[in-house]
Image (cartoon, rainbow, N blue to C red; front, side):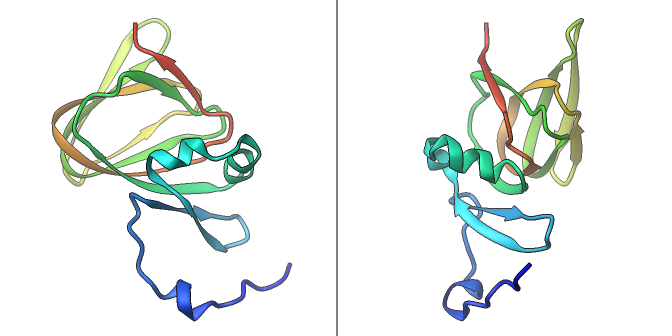
Length: 139
């Protein structure tokens, strides 16, 4: 595999992780990709390529999610930078709740549907693989 060419004009510039997500490739390379709401508008082949690597993303939540999300390719990490929230896990037979406050880390198991309920605005760092991520509306 060829070495990642150093690009001083872009590699040394800080990024806003809520607008530019970061892929952590198995090779050890790091790649910047479009983030925020634009992430889900990227073409499916690009999303499939992105889904092969770990995605580091940052989110500012002001309201509860209106959907459930499930990642069949991996566990997901939620690191709460600020705020307070519950992550609700749908295990099929019941809902389990993980309560998070600032500086708490939670692991969401692979293939478990989950959503969030806020107690205050939240700032979250997520690490996941987005390959075949599923979404469903809340009932």
